[in-house]
Amino acid sequence: MNKKPVWIASIARGHNASVCLLKDGEIVFSIEEERLSRHKYDGGPYASMIKILDYTKELDYLVIAHTQSLADTAGKVDFTGDDVYTGLARKLGLIRRKENIYNHPQVIDMSHIHHKLHAACAFYRSGFKDAVAVIVDGAGTFLPLSVNGENVIGWETESIYKCAYPSEFETLYKHIGVRGPSPGQLIKDFDSSMYDEPGKTHQALITDRAGVTKVYEAVTQYCGWSPIEAGKTMGLFPYGKDNPAIPPLFDNSSIAPLANRNLIVPTYPNAAVVNIGLFDYLNYHDSNDVTLLENRRDLAYACQTQTQDQVVRIIRKAVEMSGNKNVVLSGGYGLNCVANYHYLQALKDEGINFYVEPISNDAGTAIGAALMHWYKLTGSKHIGAHNTLYLGPSNNYTVEQVLDIAYQPGVEIQDATYNDIVNLLTKKNIVTMFQGSSENGPRALGNRSVMFDPRFVDGKDYVNEVKHREYFRPFAGSILKEYAKEWFDLRGMEDSPFMMYAVNCQPGIAEKIPSIIHVDGTCRIQTVTEEQNFHYYNLIKEFHTVTGCPILFNTSFNLGGEPLVETLEDAIWTLKNSDIDYLFLPEFNKLLTVKK
Image (tube, rainbow, N blue to C red; front, side, top):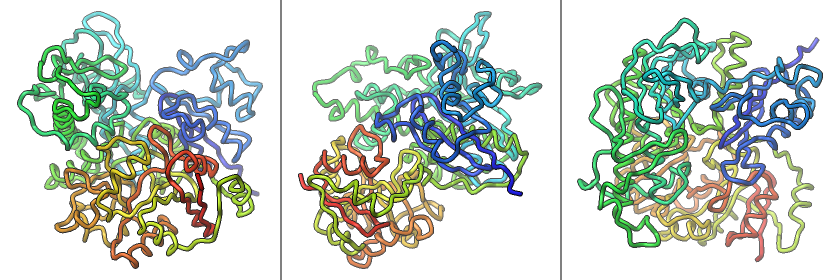
């Protein structure tokens, strides 16, 4: 008799809202709400929850991730008054309709352990048997505290966890930011019970200072962007330089990273601001585009170089506290591919094994919550193979469906081979590729990619203009794994399958692929094998055969400010609303050409 499978769905509610669905502990799909709603960083994963019905009509558990409790902040269903997520799951039939809607036994609220869910996502996907997790994030769980006799709310900024199977996540350290004056004292026996660790304590630093990520958010806002768009600051930083007119962003504290509060003022829980009034140099501006100004560029440079050095300190602290040299990194700062490469050099002689989680943003907490609940439920110590990113819902189009969708004015369809696509690329055409399940996380890895020939000198400016992106933003390269070390300095790594490192070129390489080399001489790379992505690998292989270059210019299949495309309809819409003409569907050997 077949055993009934266990279905667990988890949702991350806030920005980068997402849903992850497990069947017997294996990820069936994981997707961010923005891919379905088409609104960048969208919250409230309602469309993603409905997607669960494509796979199962009933869940065993619905797990909720956020930074605040479900009961207090999720909103209420009219008349019944249950929270909107329990209510939607109930109305869809995913959980039992007749249960107590105010305390539903199938709904598990994990909103009080936000950083721990980042750690769980990274640990379970790392392949390590045990590890220490370093979480560097903006503002995690809202924590009720007593500071100087007053009841206040604090927010996690940096956390360290000792991790082991099946579901052991012991808090070792937290930096907790609060509003208003704080003694900034280190508490060596802070109560861990609020994180589901009764009878345990951890080291805690409670301050009114910005955390590492908050410093980055402040500078990002100062450069004119939303604090969540920190990747733009990372792109701008190498245009700047070390400038003594900028005060240190961090105080010289031996305890832990403490931001200079005279310069960086946190506004917990949301972002932080640069105190520009104190410094004439920083307050100077005379351009409509502030990214052209020396002060913005130099502050971005200071932000990148100083924050990454502070994270090195936290990593060393984590290894010292845990005695474990298997280090997993997550939280929003984990997406900083410049910093990730820096750690490899700064810590190269310390025997540390790194895993950087590619879904380090809050979308990853849905994966962490689902896997944590599965391992708690089963007590399994099986080290799962969870570290793929092709996790989007299945797009199992038939050729008839493709032809039906493509049959619209201005769209032509024809047969095409890898060689046909290479010929288009070498003639300075932008070609998009759409296949299989979409990539989870912010990186395109060949299933939802925009491709170009990296050998063109003006390629970066050309594609940035077509995609409506800023001039200073770099592009990635996808390279056949067997050539990666010949072309790039991987600093001891065997591969880089998820584009999590901006690496240096080997001598003589940069001039061969100028379109994907940033102003500091680095390139964010994806190594590709045939097992990881059959069609993408063989397309790059054909490009190498024709050109002698084993690497393709790769960027996400979207326009500036939009999410990656999810469906074939999204892909065709993007072509119709841009100067991109070509869409390759390798599973069907078809090329769509959109005539404007």
